[in-house]
Length: 124
Image (cartoon, rainbow, N blue to C red; front, side, top):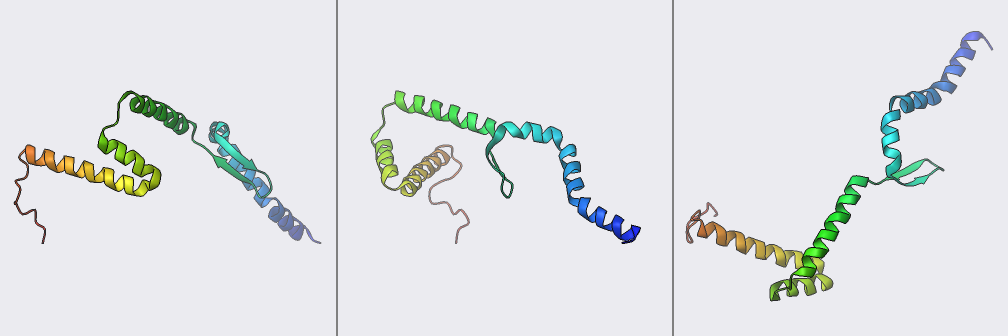
């Protein structure tokens, strides 16, 4: 084995480990920030699952606020119907709720005088 073959073999053997070390050293501060957000880590073929901590905290706070809001107000008939429908078929409950929002928006547009009933909106 001559020197050139030896050096070529050494470079090819060390290329990936050196690349990983350079990347880790370059991203060291970012990696430190991400470590607390590791939700799951698997060492076999390296796998990591991250969770955004701020997002999780915000969702929990919003869920608590929503529970407080819903517990304080009695449901009207429409809201009660939507709640029951959501337990049976959530997709239908969303469509039904959206229909209520659409009707309310149309009512506001007519009340503000932005649209007169019977006026053509450019639909064919």
